[in-house]
Image (cartoon, rainbow, N blue to C red; front, side, top):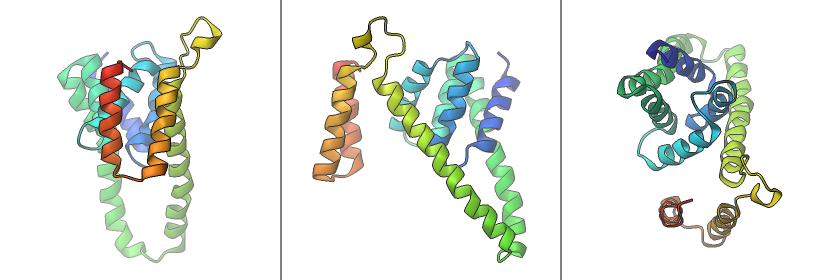
Length: 183
């Protein structure tokens, strides 16, 4: 797989992933479904690492995918491909926005982006939960649900609702339990 291909794939993802790093997940799932160089399971594992590491989730995820499949240069190219569209678009919009700040069409365009971002983030959240609790490679019906992960997810949701502590506490707990139980 060439570095140019990695750059182009992540450029495309960066161009259409409106709403942040998690909005890249539906595009990564599409790549997993249409290619043999990455799987949904690998994306789930990479997502867990990307969310645990400091920095932007999308860039962490892109870097990890590129690094895993094409080495350090692939990690840089994937991250660069992901952020390049944003840099170009922001540069253009910043120049134009000064003159079109009160334009109704521009306001409508930004308003129209909100549902798109919400849809992408919802799809990403659903995809992440599905990866965590659903075992698509199961051979028997009762193995389709990952019971440990599902019960732990339910426990975490209960703890978040009941105690309303800082999210980092739940991230540390989930990471610790995941390492101990090898989830």
